[in-house]
Length: 161
Image (cartoon, rainbow, N blue to C red; front, side, top):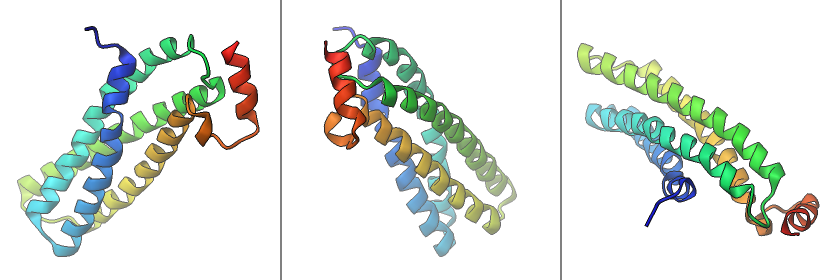
């Protein structure tokens, strides 16, 4: 059985969202408790989110070509999801790089950069928002029941003929 890009995209696209959510909560707890172990774990989890974002992004690019030939999809939401996906991909990589640099600085120096940890936490919240918007638009590509707009009926009829 051959695995296609759509299957890969759908199988792994939730990891960055939930991984970052868990990493953000863990980062908050670690920062408040001043726990070096939890802090390192949260930073490594955040780094992994950006790394998994790479195959999510590229499988999404390949999936677009296959979805365009299916009935009932929304070109409008596909285009918005693609644009948001690129932003999410870049934001995830930047966030991961920030977390990795901070991890290495704290690990090598043995110091706790409290202000940088809070800045990382704020950055995580921003990227979570971007991920959320990207995911909701991705769901609307094929799920007219969650679109909730007047354009949905027209788009479904347009692509189901």
